Image (cartoon, rainbow, N blue to C red; front, side, top):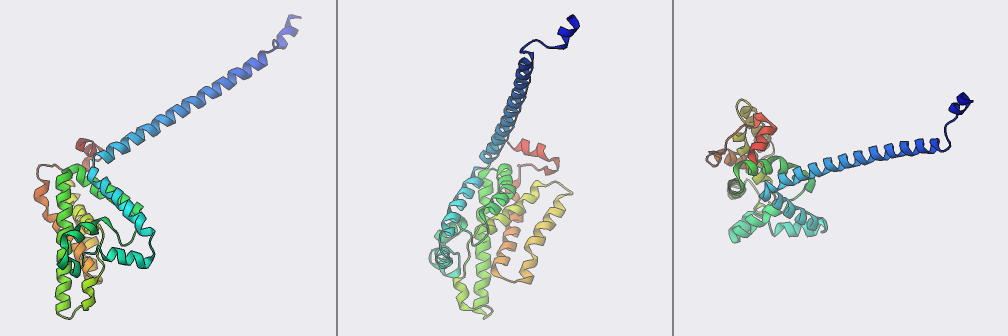
Length: 254
């Protein structure tokens, strides 16, 4: 009789077992959710710390996001006219240089905003974290302004020597690429030897060949901006180097 009773569980024991199993499943699920939310929170805090460490870069990027949205709401003809008023061409540089030099740095003539977000995070943010906002901004301004006058000066020479049509004085010239090229070049001094050599060669390989292949004033501007960036070595003194140390070097910049 005892054996027979033992063969059958007490009434309700199955429900209790199922309840215990359900409780275990819910407990595991809750633990996973809490762990996942903690991971997301940690990642979000890391991203926010990164953004705060390069305020100039990301304020500029936000401004580009706004102007890109405005540009996308225009028809191609309206966008051409809109950008033309902000172009650093010869005509505008002669009449109102400060306005167009500043205004042209907040508009692009093509390319998606996400592409610039990646490039700004890789190039500008790292340079700003390393150099500090004021020195980084100095490199951006020197590259943007210097490359603009170099390229447009060469275009003026070409027009006067009948190597380019007179309408080229009204060519569209806006964007952030000159500043980007200059900052990418100055970052060479952040890379330790022997890795600095291939980095410099990579920058030159991107910027120099188009000058001889396509021979446009923008190609000259990119090459000139890179050379200006390399010439900004004095601004890097006292800032250290050491990207070969990887993520540890990033932590040291904070």
